[in-house]
Length: 218
Image 1 (cartoon, helix red, strand yellow):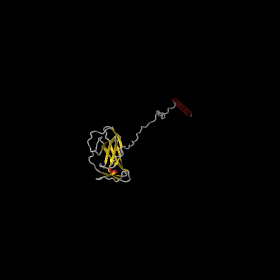
Image 2: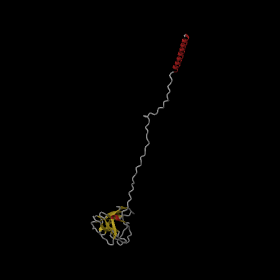
Image 3: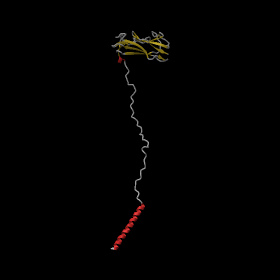
Image 4: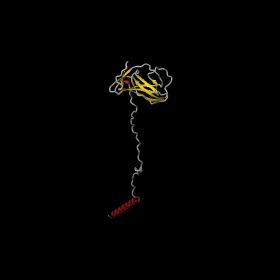
């Protein structure tokens, strides 16, 4: 009995010594370092990073409307009047209904430039007027200092009647390019060109005459 008690006491002493040794080594070694994942490197501070600029975009092109003028057919005499050849001249409207006007394409002409002369017939009435606008009735007359210099009828090779019906408010135009030449009745030869100066143009159509207009040759 006493021997058993001694053995128990001895076992307790040995256990206490072993437990104290283990505790001492654990205290000397210190607490185990915690295992942690390596910290990620800090990124740039969003507050200090330069702002991100998106690449500029190109707007869709805007179609440009064409500036070319629309194609139109050249006006014809039938659009304003109906032309009918006639062997006899005849007007259906009086002088107050049909008026005559003279014009030129420019007010002055340099040497070598050709004056373009116009005879314009207008219907000022409220009804259609039939007018003989043939070369048998038409004349362009130019004077310089009251001297007759040129007439389109002096050297005219034949003539004809041409009746045209001009609608109310309508107008017809005859064009003549003057070659800066001089003429006399009977178409006798005149060996000199028209001189420089201020010319007066009068147009005639049968018994009608226009007011004079002036232009300058240099």
